[in-house]
Length: 186
Image 1: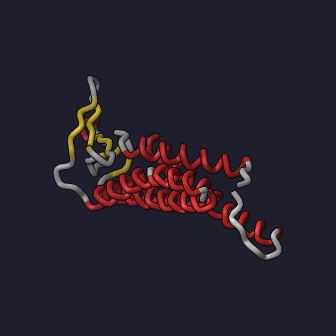
Image 2: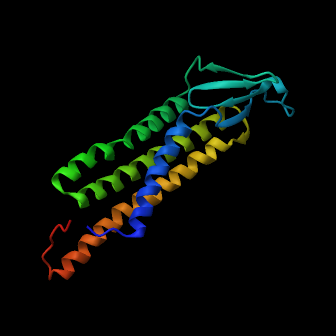
């Protein structure tokens, strides 16, 4: 198997994207909202939301409360982000199979496809959460964790795309070099 700097960069991009998705899933501050619909938002009406709770930031310390009635957008976002986080573990299990059976091309292709699915789940989750929260409350700001989540999704999209399409392209090139006979070179 021929490795190139692009493939290595894509693999590391996928790994860092997955780690970013996991850390963003469990971070406390995604959005800052105002619960009051008036023109001026009092300090007591400012809340931050994440997938797991709503928090009130006081001068002493943040107080977080779990959702009492779970909105649909939070439920969908939770499921998709947890699924994306767990999906990132799948290539680790496939690595054992690839090493044992010397199926590197299949491993790279599967890793690329799983990373693309993980990125799609994260993209739908963050977008759904943003739109749902903005429809329910007045949105004051999108916090850094949200941007970090989008950056992680971008890393996953880059890594998954390169791993998937570069691997399928390298198979076509090998088939042309062999005179039309494709072989799985390791």
